[in-house]
Image (cartoon, rainbow, N blue to C red; front, side, top):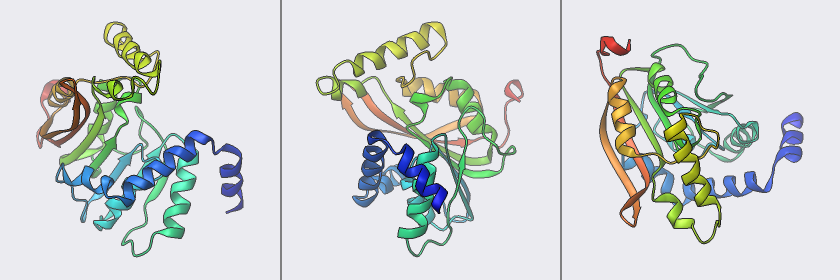
Length: 238
């Protein structure tokens, strides 16, 4: 549509272009499907929400599983416009067309306990508060439903120390500030997957699968976690 085309033309940055290109490159070479398979995630006949959907590469794979309903949310309208246009014009034979909405953690525009599956990949480094974000993800998930999340561990910046110059140091600084101050003055923090699992347990989600795609100097680079929401939530967190 004309308004969407104008938005893309006026707001598409080099960073957007690089991000979109990489996302669909991962989709094409099968990396996106592998991210679901390693956690044994299937969206078939489920109501599914992808939080931080970006340009929609994960939504394409989720849609291929024939879910009952599929929604992607992202804070960046450019990604939403691109994802919607790309899927409608380029992807054939989808059993369900994803719905794209603008929203972000820690406030999702959905009622309690309506999704069977919630995915949230590589979003945790950017949320204002880890605990609050996980609580919101748990809120919209049905009892017995599945949460699949991923994020960056302490080994992630080491992979790019030379190429990104000061960026890795910024990530470590951001993480240190958050740990001791409790505020993410600088986003793009690193997480301990063990601490994330502890937070999940505290809010009534039981981690079932924990996977690392790479370790650097013994430190986790990127973690992937699948957790199931307990049928009965502890009274202390209701």
